[in-house]
Image 1 (cartoon, rainbow, N blue to C red):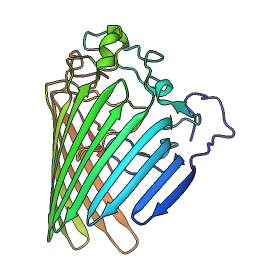
Image 2 (spheres, rainbow, N blue to C red; image 1 turned 135 degrees about the vertical axis):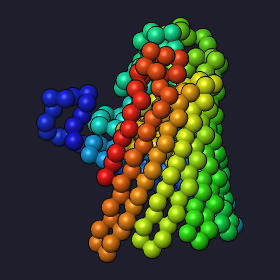
Image 3 (cartoon, rainbow, N blue to C red; image 1 turned 120 degrees about the vertical axis):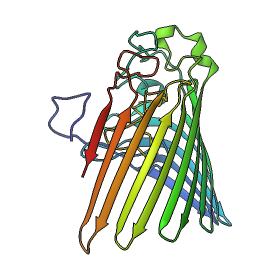
Image 4 (tube, helix red, strand yellow; image 1 turned 180 degrees about the vertical axis):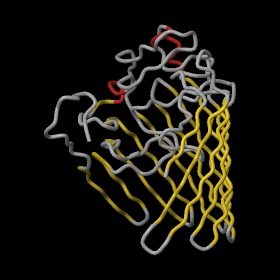
Length: 288
């Protein structure tokens, strides 16, 4: 536990993460304040050995007849391993800035006027099917749409995720090096999963493909991507035109669960910054 903005502070590494009002009426739930974030494909707590992400704003949740609807506006965030709260405008660019496609260092801090993040979600569970559609609108920056379809029957589970991104017009008015995303970058990701479960054991294989239409981009200050191949040290953020393969094995006993995941990233070129914002190299990661 530490604060990366105050690395020499050894006392009082804490923050107020939850302080909100909540109203419930029939199947409608409304929450406002420093809220416990609902799990989303990109905004999430991602907690671990460091202080997790925390969010402030309003969230509306409604469920009826198997359908689920969510709408939210997030105006502040306290990023992972930080104790201070920032507006979305202030938060973008706090962490690793990376590189522009032309090789220049990205200079985005204090060059954005984003007022917040809008989220919309509709989901449906019926019989063996699970469908989710999310849209994440990062004001004046980028719009990300996310579709997930899963099928579960007996011991088998299959899943498909498709994500596509579009830069917002405001970015074109910024200088090249100050843009978070270039006008011609349109991130596209396809993620597939198959899983077999028997007794207390499950085996999973997954594959993700980031296409060459542009880099998949989402500010590291706001959360972590949740594709089927995503692991603690294997994310798609900043990458395009690459392949990711993942296998997983989980077995549970009465009082113990053991999980082993391995992911391999292929196709990266550290010199081709058009598809590699953070100069990632091909790698294989293991997590137990």
